[in-house]
Image (cartoon, rainbow, N blue to C red; front, side):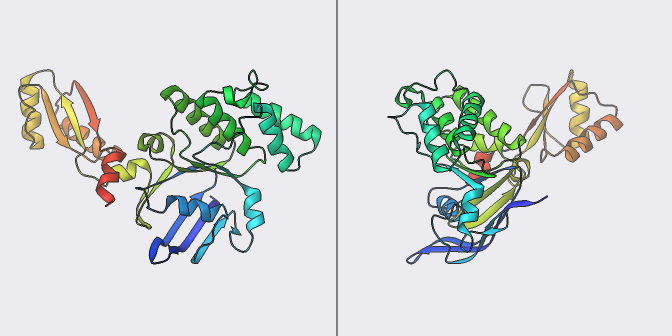
Length: 303
């Protein structure tokens, strides 16, 4: 699989303060990648370097093979950026905001009209196209903002805190739009403070702390870094419970017919557990898998 983004030994300082410290990252094309970390970890600086707004002190950053320092124009043609604060002009209608972006991208009149109509329909803004953007709800503004970033047909989109301030329904609507973009082959580079958002969307997640990469992997892989995962086994009677407890060396949960067994949440460990019970002819009425969430991971690996 081709990498859309590659960072190698990336460093950036402001005076004596090191913001990025020898950062290595790869983001495969057509995936959603989430960069997480506490305030000041280096997330914004990373996005600014990748979007050619600032230069690294050393190291290399490439977007689809284009060096952000040596070929910034090629990088800019390949990317779209949707910041935390909306770039929508309240004095213009939704359609006029998109037309402005079409003009900035030097789209011809007919091509621009087709592009604008397609984006208005895709983002559910056709009925409100000629309304002033100042009248739009928060969710509509974010959809329009994202649509504006797509006028140039970018191959990579940087989303900085895309759902800040949105209600749960609007947030989930935007999540679906992001998933649809990836289905079309677009690569998403996401920064967010909502760990649930990263868990729901991201194929891979990187955690930064003080400019260093402290964890990297799929959401499931990261959750297995933190102890505390377990499987709750529910039994129909005390006999089955006692037999299972003796076999697994676990203590029943109070007076209930529940046995809690440590597990990392992986398919392999769950299958091994069920195979042991099946071999011993112990029936399980129900089971529940509990794993640490990304909040637990975040608190465990960042300082």
